[in-house]
Length: 275
Ligand SMILES: Nc1nc2c(ncn2[C@@H]2O[C@H](COP(=O)(O)OP(=O)(O)OP(=O)(O)O)[C@@H](O)[C@H]2O)c(=O)[nH]1
Ligand SMILES: [Mg+2]
Image (tube, rainbow, N blue to C red):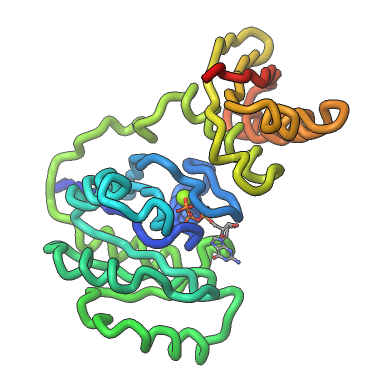
């Protein structure tokens, strides 16, 4: 059997649903998702094997105004340059932003280009068609798809097209490879996702999660630190009588149990790093 292999980069503005799309393609949580901007902060590779084709999907941090500089794009552009197929995901419900930047990326990208208009569960066809007319370079895309990543609509069509277009080649990863991040890093991401869910404004963007220890016996015991830089942030994360941290911890723990399919105890400490 001749095998196929290739990279598919998923790019586009923040909050357009790139990570949701990835999770739907895999049928499980691979990358964290939130209603806030800048949820994905580092590119992530995830390997999917379908029939004779091995596809490495690359989830990337979305475009975001405050970070729209050369440094920020190094990671994203690096990921894109590896790709056999580049998917740009736009949110059908929001103003199409960064169209000029996307134009540059698209016109410089030599391989196949897909445009995915996501969140079609929230808007009607006429509205979408009108919005599409804003994209003057629409013909540069090889294929356009209208999907709902959340409601799992038309995702199978996208996958089929990817399978068709990827080149023949040896699989680079073993059959069991899933992502390029460790279990520890992923569990840190799960806690960050919970913080994005429960805490507002700047807090989620000013913390880091680190791991002290993970042990596994009758249950996983996961010891993590939430590192903050100011006392006021520490107070907000803890909440009145520790209510916020309890909420964050119990949601994160539930997610971890779902992912690991094992009982989990999560121990969170909020640490103020001295400047
Ligand atoms: N209604 C609806 N909501 C969606 C759909 N896809 C994603 N969302 C929501 O859009 C928000 C952003 O989703 P993410 O997947 O985190 O977006 P992202 O593009 O990865 O964002 P960044 O990582 O910040 O670049 C979340 O609240 C999702 O639940 C969709 O098809 N329909
Ligand atoms: Mg994301």
